[in-house]
Amino acid sequence: MAVVALMVLLVVSACGTSEPSHQRSGSNPPLLRIPSATVLPGASHTVAFAADGSGFTLRAECTRTRCRQHVAVLDADAGEWRRVTSPLPDITGDLGITAGLTVLGPDRALIEEGRAFRGGPDRTWFTADGGRTWKSGTTKPTGTTATVPKGAALAEECVQPDPADVNSCLRNRLLVVMPDTGEHRVLDSRPSLKGLVHPAGDLALVPGGSDTLFVAGETPDSGLPTLALSEDRGRTWRTTRMAGAAKDGWNPWVVAGGGELYAVQSGQLPSHEGVKNGLLAIHASADGGDTWTRIWRYRKGVEPLSALSLLAADDGSLTVYGESGTWLSADRARTFHPVTRSRGPAGSVEQTPIGWLWCDSYGGGHCRISADGIHWQDFHIGKDQD
Image (tube, rainbow, N blue to C red; front, side, top):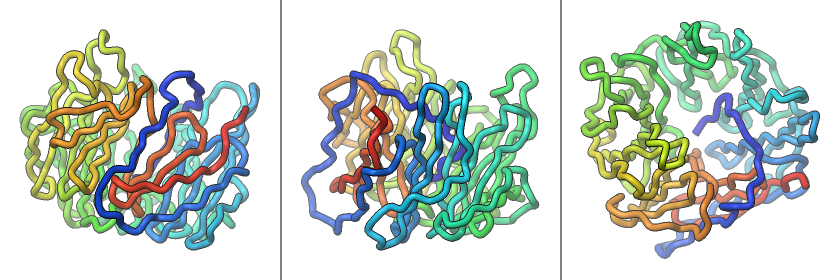
């Protein structure tokens, strides 16, 4: 899925370094082939692909006082990654890496660098030729649009910041990142949800997926977290029915796999659980997202206690990637079993136009790609700095 203004912490830890074995039994689909590249500078923090197998990666090469930011591109059927000129400036001091990457189709990508905390729009750079040239811009909207075109990305803009907290927002609106220019436009139609509305999933980005879009917010009557969906690319919206939503949970997000949809609801657990991204509930939908049934809920001390991402494989299994490891369920979330032997993050997974993408937690550049969530191909896109 699109990654916008991603704050990345490049850390090295002595725990949780074992990697899950993703291979399981089942019929073997054609394996995706992503080449490795072990001579790229720095550490990878963002990797994204288009439907034709082309891709982009952002990397950071850091010393104690400065970080150089690099970009590499994989052309479709090229067989190797190529380093391109990075439009991103060097970073000094302790500002941290705020660059995010959105792939908008073959050879097209938008890089965004977060500067919103300084009171202005984020800076952006757009390429339509595989990183050979970049056009600078900002996330400030340049107009409106009635729909979210194929290849576009749904984003959000805070239009009323919280005066008491620079990192909080009181009112926002949905934006569309246009695939042909990288410009941001305001989406005309707003779902009838209360509070802040956040993008929660685009099934058009899933191989073989529909045109359905999801956004998350609060129900107008109860104020509980819920989802709204659009089957016409954002022209009209309807609120879904999500029974059992956790009252104090954060906004749910949607993944597709095994013939069903799943919505994950994270939130803050009691402090004794010792996690930041607590897993409160998992919901399932068999009717395209109109109705949701809760299939898992938080119970004291029962893993998985946290969720960084969820994999829904074609065989019906569910895998939760959490802060304390990876947890697999073969019985529709009734029970989970640990996949990794050690405690600690074991990477995270996301859906891309070419399948499931898993990457490690420590910037080492180790990734895997899978069309079905069962059979995986490993690739490496550079080594972390010593």
